[in-house]
Image 1: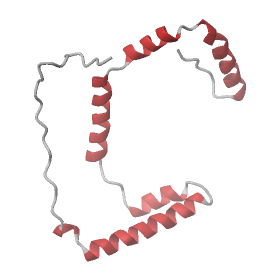
Image 2 (image 1 turned 90 degrees about the vertical axis):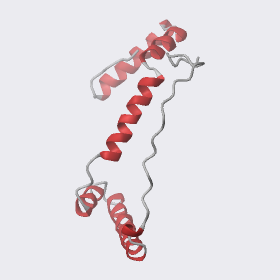
Image 3 (image 1 turned 180 degrees about the vertical axis):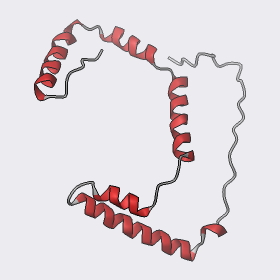
Amino acid sequence: MVVLTDPSPEALLAGVEHAIQRIHHIDPWAFHTRVGALYSWQQVSARTERVYDDVACGPDDAGLVVSLCRYYKCGPLLGKLAVAVMMVLWVYWRVLEWVWPAAGVEHAKTCVLLQKEQPNKTKSGDFM
């Protein structure tokens, strides 16, 4: 399914040539079946949910200065542009915070979805 090579131009070229030679001997339907067996919607949704939870519950950024330093390292032109955009957005955020303080904004309640078993659905979740 995969041809691994060293990260050098010569090895990458050899790997691509090897993959092109192998392509004529691979059954597309068998390949599709093998890849389909590696994943399920339950696994994909569980992984996606874990990523979203990690992002939502993760630690806050170290601060503005650390973020600006990271943006500044994006390149000689793009880095300076990113820092300028971030500074404008930061000033805009501070103005909005001054006009409408966050303490006065009503927080949304946490949505709890009820998990109900539906009798007509299959347990495997395979819809194909």
